[in-house]
Length: 204
Image (cartoon, rainbow, N blue to C red; front, top):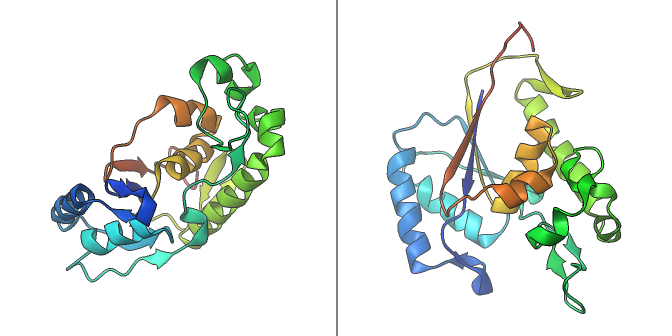
């Protein structure tokens, strides 16, 4: 199975939509998508992702299924360098987050007091559980740090979503702290992040 995560086009955050440039980007994405074999599509409920999917999938006959958990990864925190203003949980200054060794640990990153106060770990678990449920419905069941290929297939699933959310799901798939991806990866508007399954042993 192939998973394709597509970030929305250039955002108009104030109106939760796309800028003129973002619409142009989604048009170009449509040209690329028409050449691809896509079996199923899923979309965030936020306007900028929904409009991107509408333009990008035009003429394909594919109707994306909307999932609430595909919205941008939402928890807010009290960032150490700011007072009186909430920040998205994955937006830290490098000197602050790299000084906390547990942020590099896939099992301990959410135990940070700042993350605990923002309920970040609980939201991470909720989103990843919903993602795993969808994967199980499509043939791949989570088993510890791996997936069992219960019904292996070559289908392509496309997710129209957001930067922070994509990094969240990728960290779950490859078993690393999301802090490493939130701070070490860049995804331009309408960029594609492609993940392929590979059975190294039958069923695994």
